Structure formats: C-alpha cells, structure tokens
Image (cartoon, rainbow, N blue to C red):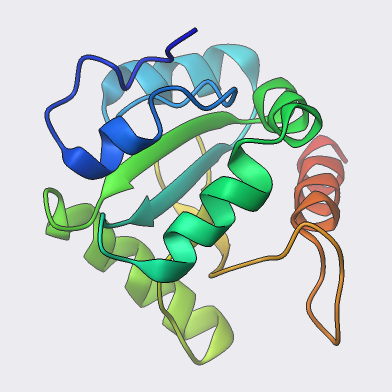
Length: 147
C-alpha cells in the first residue's frame, strides 16, 4: 500500500512510495502530526543517484519490523535534496556541527517545529564496527524523547 509519497513528482520520493514506512513529504502537515502525537520528526534526506540511500532503503526502510518502529515512534519525512536544497542545508549544517561530517542519506531527528537535535548518515540494519544499527538509533532516540 503506498504511503503519502505516491502523489509526489520527485523520482527519489517515488522510489520510497511503496515502503512500509509511513513517509510523508516535508510540510506543515507532518509537523502538526508530530506535535499532536508528541513524537519527534525523523527527516531522511537523499537523492535518486545516491548509492547509500538505495542501500539503506533496501536494508532498513523496506523491512516491516523496522518500519513499524519508525511509524510508532516518529513522524517520518522523506526529502529529495535536489528538490529541497533549503531543507537539506539546515539538516546538513546540523549534522556537520554535531558529528564533524555529513553525507547522504542524511537521517536527522527534529522537534515537531523542525529544529534538529540529532543527526547522522547511513546506519546498517545490524551494528558493525563502531556503527550502531538503525534500530539502536531509533530505540535510543525514542527513549530519550520520552524521558
């Protein structure tokens, strides 16, 4: 069943239209939903030619259990950096300030009014090396928000 990206024109957003994640485009509706549910925004930014964006989509965003976690604990927004360079710039600046580096996919977490509070790039489905799994990231940020 398609999510809210199925009506978009961006090739990148349309690549995610059949994910089990309840993706929606950047906009006031997503922010209002996050405020109403009292959950953070999960803003995932990429572009259609990005290799690691496709890898993360295949490994994590297509996984029903991971998608269930994302849908339950966040309002999930997908952004095409080529279509919305203004949004990308805000979150990339935040990611670089927080981590010292950046890249895509850019996965950022923000307050319901869009202020970033944590960001990173690619996360694998299982922890490896000193890289946490995407599920560990989701669980940690969801717990931190709730507490």
